[in-house]
Length: 232
Image (cartoon, rainbow, N blue to C red; front, side, top):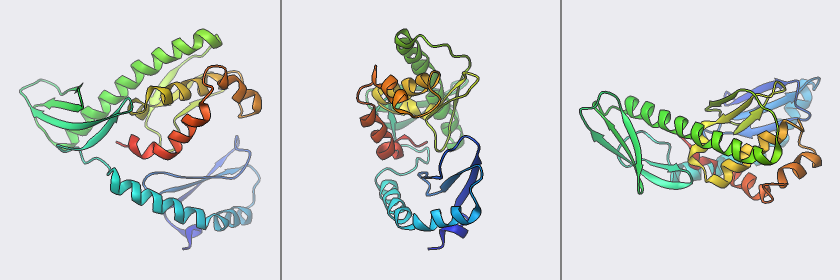
């Protein structure tokens, strides 16, 4: 495998990165983050040394794709909603705009024209809206403890990040978190809140997180191992 020259790998330079880092998303795409000043020869050797790990990771991703396929936005697709599995149910109704609701173990989409593109748009808009509701609520709840100042809160669908905090005190969250258990959402919310005080992952940072999320390692592991369940 010549992963270094593969079209399935992206190299990203970052002035904030302190070390070479590699991530693989659920589509099998490899992202290598490169700190400032690292020579190309070092990067290529780093990737070459990781080829065994990459092969194992891609094998696991293929297994995940078999057990939980990427949705095609058709009747019977499986999603997760706040950590619980739900099955997509499509109802053709004479409605002015699509409506999405969760009832028991069903993710129900009611719309006039049940085309995949319209269903996808409706489901993703619903999840983004729900993420906004839940995360704003959890931010207020946990910030009662931390009493930290933050400014803008935004929601995006990022491939490799569940949250981020800028030096301008803006917080960003992945709206796919609406599919995760509330304990995972809480971990990500507290993680980003704590970056308002510690813009690093030092022992002080993790001690700050542990004040409210003592099992943070458990939920970090959940995100690493179960992120394939949070696909849209």
